[in-house]
Image (cartoon, rainbow, N blue to C red):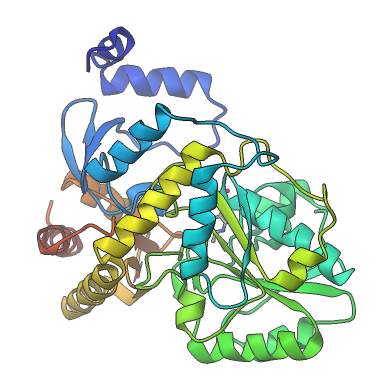
Length: 401
Ligand SMILES: *Cc1c(COP(=O)(O)O)cnc(C)c1O
C-alpha cells in the first residue's frame, strides 16, 4: 500500500487498535482479542502478522473469501464508473443484477426490493406482508433470528434482545421449530405472515425438515397467510441459492443478504407479482439501496458462484466436513448439524473455551448460542482447508494444550 494513511495505521499493534476501539465504541460486542487487518483467499491476518484459517467468513458474508481477484477487479472497475445512483433513475448494473436474480429466484418470485442489510430486508418484507394482507400479526419460530432493528426484532425470538424494547411494534407469537402443527394453531384472522429460517443460524444451526417446510407452505396457503423465508444466513451456502427452494417449496417472500455481495453491504427482498402489486408507491424506500457499487458486487459474486460451481463445492465439502467431525466420535460432542457450509457442533460444554482453543491453533470460528460452535467458511475452500479445520477441531476437542 502506498497511501500515507494506510502506511500510518499499518504500524499499529493489536493492543493499540483494541484499546482505541474499546475506548471509543459503544460496548455492544464481546470483542475477541485480535485485530484483523488483511485477508487473502481463505486466510485472515492480524495486526501482528499472524495467519488464521477463516472458518467464519465474518458471519457468512465472504463466500469468495478475501481479496478475490475477479471480485476485486469488478469492484475497482465500478469505482471508476459510477458508485452511487438513486433508484428513481435507471442503472445498467442494477438492471443486470435484477436479470441475474431472475435466473436463481424460483418461478413466481419475480419482484425485488434492494436494500443494504439483512435487517432491512426483513423490515421491507414485514411492511409488504402487512400492506398485502391488511393484517398485522406474525408467527415466528423459537430460536429464530431476524435482526435487531425494531420491526425485525418483533420476529427475533431471543428475550435478551427483545426485553429491553418491549412492547415491540409488530404483534408476534413464537412457536416451536420443526413442528407444523404449532404453526397452524398459532395462525388466526389477524395473522399477516409466518416467518422462518430454513436453517436457523444464530439459534444454533437447526435445519428445518423438508416435510416441515412443505407442511408450513401448505397451511399458510390454505389459510391465506404469507410465508416469508429468511435466507439471510442460509442463502447461497447450503448447496443451492436457496435452501427452502431446494427443499421443494416456493415461499411468498424470500430474504437474503449476507453472502449475496461477498461482504459488500446489501439486502434483498424477493416477492411475488401479487404482493408487489399491492404495495403502494412510496410505501418503502432506501437511499443507498440498489446502488451501482453494491449491485456490481452482487452481480459479480453470483456470476463467480455459477462459473466456479461453488454451490456444488459447498454441498460436497460441507457433507465431508460433517461426516469427518461425526467420525471423531468425540465425547465432547452432543450433535453435529448443518447443510452445505453452514455447520454447527453442539458441545456438552460451553463453546467459548473451544473457540479460544481453535483461535490459538490459528482457526477462526463462531459461536451460535452458548453450546454450539459454528462454521460458515468461504465457499472457495478446498480439501486443504477442510483438512486444516479437522486437525484443529480434533486437537482442541481431545483437550491438548
Ligand atoms: C444476520 C441475520 C439477520 C440480520 O442481518 P443484519 O445484516 O445483521 O441486519 C437476519 N436474519 C438472519 C437469518 C440472519 O442470520
